[in-house]
Length: 294
Image (tube, rainbow, N blue to C red; front, side):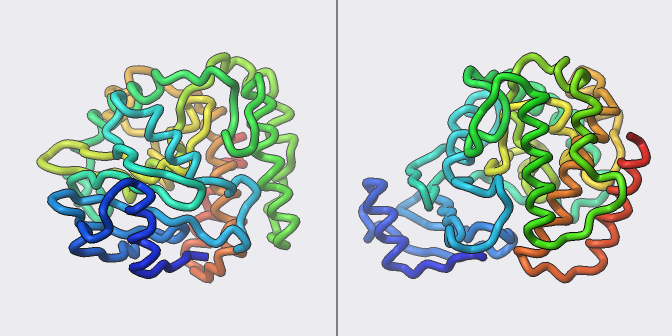
């Protein structure tokens, strides 16, 4: 799925961005991601990051279309509200942006990780102040006027993907998960900017502060409660995060959105060729827990 490009192709992106290719003095691939190909570039005195989309003919899920454009739009919308990269140049297949300082929160000791949670809640609250003018849903799938309809479409997409890739789903996973909660979902009246992938690997810290929210390609306009799925991935809600956010979270909607993300994680294993049995069992266990809560 990941697409490698050579030095000439990197030079071509720089040229389209109005940057002299000869200014590039070093480049290296960052191998942590599993979807896009990412390079760190040294251009003069600047550190930039180049993200390259997978080959559009490679297998993927229904919502995995034009994600580079979605990520670009997310950074433009979030600037000034959250620490995100500045877009230098973007087109349909590449995104060139500033490199943020810091390292990811992956592998931090629990006590050190916990020290960032209140600040993280405050940043997310600020991010959710960004309101969409055109409707709810994934921008690349088309926006609609209500969150209930948007989420139903999102769920229907992943259910269709499961059928397309022959992924067996647990008993109880049907579109009625959302249909039966249509009125509850319709209590969400305002489309807010949702990153939807704020797990520790996409959170940067530097000098005792949160220095970046990255990988905004999964963003959509929707219910702020959905943000807390990745913020508490495979875990529970913590008081520090909620204190920083300054509002409580509806637990029924949270369970519904957790089911949605776990379904994505379950189904995407097939087109990605993921054979990690330990991760499969972890997803299945948490999916069953949230289905039981509903």
